[in-house]
Length: 187
Length: 230
Image 1: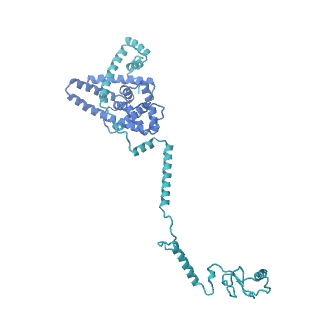
Image 2 (image 1 turned 90 degrees about the vertical axis):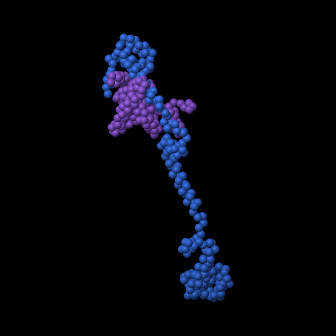
Image 3 (image 1 turned 180 degrees about the horizontal axis):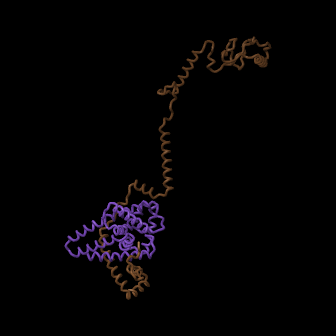
């Protein structure tokens, strides 16, 4: 698509009735939001649903966007809320989706013959399990940094946290991941 | 939550993170590089965190490899008129929704009024005799009126002339010298008044005298006193 301007300009266009404008917002942010939801939820299917729900919620509440924060921050907040809602629902249903799928996938990976593939799969599954074991406050910052590649300032704005808190939470998150991965490696 | 559960004893964790993610300023970068040379803890953490990042990166690449655009974007941009209208209303400000609603109601009222006006019969013939099923033309109506008049005339008691129901005839007053016309009409030849008895009261004395005086003025040749019935 041709030059459309900043996210904020596109949102204004969507508000003034441009039907394609919101589609452009989705195109711009879909991958990152998917990365965020995937990082938080740990399952592709859940991440897809949460991504779609994020954009639907954003579209419904487009009028509520006042332009005080960035569109990206606004979308991230919605996405994190969607993930939390899904996790709460899953908890109510006593579903341990991650654990189930992890065990299944580890078994599947072990069935595959090349050792490197098995090692690679085991490592990614270990990362996934380690990440999902983190408290949400740490996990979402690690995901926003690693999956979405947002800057500290962008994360700070999206989560409405001081820059120093973002850095310290990221440090703590990485430290805990390091310890968990070491633990998995020893099992 | 305790922010620094696994905090380092070193104070440079902020710089470590900034350098690790390439967001440190040149000065911070330089200072941290100098610090790492003499701080084994930060050096070890930097290496460990780099490995963690590498592992996360592998998972991320694998996770996002299968990512495809969602149907909401991949779908054809063409929308149905109803969907476009719904979207327009979703995005419209409240005042615009109100204005459109008011306009829609006004339009509906106008349509109903116009329909009522154009669908009603243009010139409905009058209904005569309470029979709403019958439709009469003007000729029928005139004939009916004429018949009714004739019937009424036939039912009148004897002695009451047609003048009661027709246009009034000139009043004729009897005098000794014959009947006199009051308003120029021809005399009917009768010596009595042609008025219907129930229609007009008899003249009072004063009226008679006044009338006589008037007649005298009208007709100078007639000198005799009028002979009124008493």
